[in-house]
Structure formats: structure tokens, C-alpha cells
Image 1 (tube, rainbow, N blue to C red):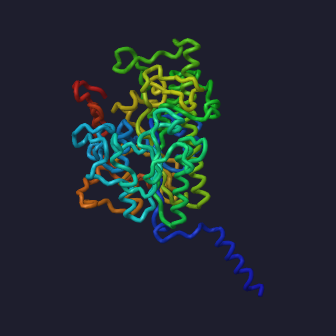
Image 2: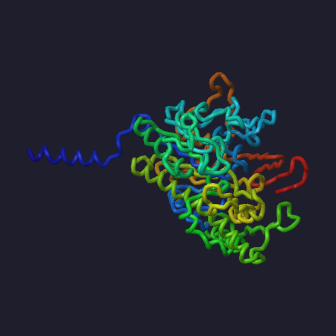
Image 3: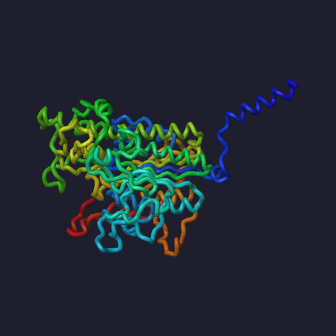
Length: 488
């Protein structure tokens, strides 16, 4: 009896220690999560030289791969269109924002010549979910995630924090195509946007696991886009830490980037914009009064808190993946849609009777702090200089990335994410979809870089609001389409 009991007990204990059984599809196919930040600068994360506390994203970078030559389109709507379709934004119909300009590349919404990641991965057997800011459906929300391949979604037409009556600049939420009020019983009480989006992302992951399917989650945060709003306890952690000012803090970020190998030590840090430089002049920090410095410290403390809270949410998401024992075979891609924003001008905004960062307040980081956020580059969001189009990209996939902690310097682009997901999922990118001819992919898969290979683009292209650039063979060429003057 003893000889039959103990082997059986040991076998049972070993079974209990193993991951829960998956479907044939899930065991063969990796899960995929794309996390998109909104208006976050190239150097805001600790793993890209920043001083903001981002331990969870830094941990993903240490266990994964950092792309330090990765580009977006310089603005929110076009970047989302390119990310979702693998095409240049103009090909997908979103060359500018959501207004229909009556031109094929500027319809303001995804057209029928493209397919989304959701549509492609849904066809490959994936559970598909989208949470957060959509912003590729046109002013009238004519294109929705539930119509473009996402079986489940909690989305906002555009952006904003504390939706509905609790915030500024925000619209209603849609849950699986149903309009929700801000006080809907399907939403938790006193919810905060970043936390809510992550909570629903976790719900959808768990539902996919219950259904025994591989999952694709597109988690498009509104953080850290203005108006910057965040719980006060997060702001308190940073109050006073930005009294050193943008001149000194920018130099420190630059030095950390050199030490981390993100940039070459031969690169010089560009001068602070002066009068006549083409962008509004930014004052020397030491020229400001104590009152002005304190005001700017408040503004950047709120911005840093928003990024910190975003990092906390990533930590909760990763903890759930670990709990469900699916982290090892989940590809996580984290990036920003454009550089830090100079909107609000050099002074930024600090308005409202409420405490800065509270619902109804208006806090915009502005151009002076964008100079810090986009270190070591010039210019900011909406420009096709590197300060506008450079994004921090982190790829984490324990089973698929063979050089954890490494840097990839290949010149890569947000159009590459579709091709990457297609290859990772073993999916098929279609030539036609629902009877419509689909444009061929412009992007290239990043998968070769996961094991030390290269991703080679012959050239990359940008156009936004008449500002144009080409990157070919490591050389930039740029111009104002309307003025014809050199800009890079």
C-alpha cells in the first residue's frame, strides 16, 4: 500500500505546482499586450534616464529589451492608426486628427483599406480586448473598436481623466458598445482613469484564461496627457523634487542616458531654446523668482505623479500575469504615442480652485518641462524632430526574448508593431478583408531583434501638419512643406 500511495501523492503535488492547463491554441500561441502611454517623453522612465519612480517598467526593461531608436508619428491619432494597422497613418486615413478634411489620407478615421491588430488576431483565434483611448474613429465616432476586431472593450472616444462630471476634457465611456454614465453601477465608486483601465484589462485577461484562449490586449492609457489629474497622495511624493529646475535636471538625465548606453557620449546636449530659435524661448531656471519656481515645481510634481501612477498600474497588471502563470509566454510592448507636449506654452497651466491634479483642475506641463521630458532631443509633440517622434519602447517576453536587458539601436517605427504581432501569433495578414482590398504592410517585424538580429528599414517617413521628414541610412532630411525651409 505504501509503495502505491507515495508516488501518487508526489505526482499529485507536482501537478498542483504546474500552470493551469491551457487550450491547444494558448499553449501554442503567446499572449500579447500592447500598452500605450499618451504624451510621455522619451526620458521620463528610469530605464531611459528619468528621475520619476518607475520600478515596474524598469523591471520589464531589465528582463526584456529596450529599443532606443524607435519612432512614432509625433501625434496621438496618427500614432494610434499606425500602431493598429502597420501602415503609415495617411494610408489608414488618419494623417492628422479626427476631423474629416475631405482627402483620402485625412479622413480622421480608420478606412476600409486597412485591418487592425484586433481583426487580424481575432481571425487567428485570439481573445481580443481594447481598453482606453480609441481616437481613430472620427469626430462622430463612426469607427469603433467593437466593429474593428475587439470582442471586448471599455473605451473613450478621445482622452481625459476622471470621466463625465468628475473631470475636464473627457467624454463618456463605452463598455462593449454600450454607453455608460460616469456613475454607472458597472464602474467602481470613485474611480480613477488609469486604475480603471488597468482593472478592466485584468478582467479581460482573466476572462480569456477562463475561456482557454490566447489573448491580445490593447491598453491605451490617457496618462500623462493634459489636463494632468491624479490622486493627491501621488503628487505629495514629488513636491519639491523639481525645485532644481529643468536646466540641472535635464543635464542629470543626459548623464544617466550616457551611463546607461542609451545615447553616445559624443552627443552634445542641445541648447535651451532661445529667442529666434523657431520655438518659444524657455527661460533659464535661475532667472525665475522663488514664486515662479514653486509654481513650476507644482506642475512637474503632478506630471511625475501621473507617470508614477501609470507605472503602478503596470505593476498590478504584471502581478496578475504572474499569479495566473502566463507572464512567461506573454509579449508585453510598452511605448508612447509621441514626445512630451509643449502645449500650454513655456509657462504651462496651473489653474482651478481645487488642488492641482484634482478633478476639475487644469494642469499642463507645457514647453519648459517638455524640454526635460524629451531629453536629449529638441522640440516636442507635433513636431517631426526627434523630440516629437522618439518613443521609449520596452519589449518583455521571457520565452521569446533571448537577450534580457539589452539595447536595440535599430531604427524602428510604430508601423512595425503589427508585423511583430502577426509573426508572434502565427497569424496571417490578409490581402482582402470582408471583400475589401487591404494595403500591404509597411512595417517590419521586430522579432529578429529579440535574439540579436537586425530590423532594417531602407527609409522611414513623416508628415504632420505640413512638417515633413525622412530618415534614410541614419541621415535625417526635413522641411516645412509650406515654407520650404530646412528644419532638421
